[in-house]
Length: 253
Figure 1 (cartoon, one colour):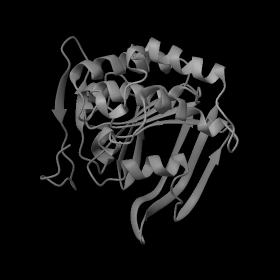
Figure 2: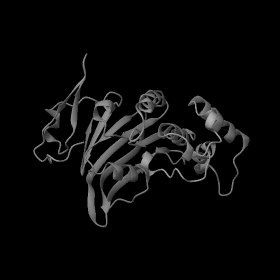
Figure 3: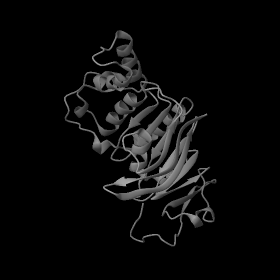
Figure 4: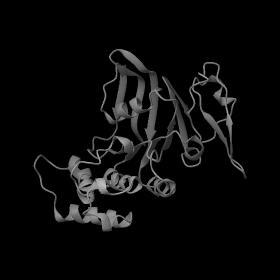
């Protein structure tokens, strides 16, 4: 089932086009890895999908009107760690979209938060200020906030940046399980790792090239105006750096 359809979208800032005539379908069960160079439009694409930004042209169609269509895990460095709020309050805030104005959280909501924190091994930190835990722990908390409303689509913007390798390993295992219940879109610079976990790839560099697999060959990249690494799957995974005619040699993922 199709959940979101972007057709012929152009978008940018102050008249400058960042995304040029792109199209993308997001379906149930998808796990899409979004890759591309800095400034290529990856975060802009997420804003368009989330409805946080209006495109210059094109159409966006949502097949579900539910308020919990999306769950969103932002980049870690964009989180205000000094805001005076506890771990459980952060997770509870993920239910705000399902509440009417001034409607209070009930016992069921609060128990759901505690159950989720327990599942992700963060229960003992439930009353701890969000700024007093590690980066990996904070990302677990914000992941709990993103999924507590049981969204149909989970969107992650470079979730492993600035966090330790232990969190990264746990995250990918968690996403594998979550993908059984929801579609996932994840932006990442870690091409080698992301290709091992996603089902399909969208390469974004002003244009969007969608590849219906997690394996891209140099031949298939010949038409892509996007500098990315290629991961060849086998007994010993390895990377091959593909050349692009329009690739900026100083622009490395």
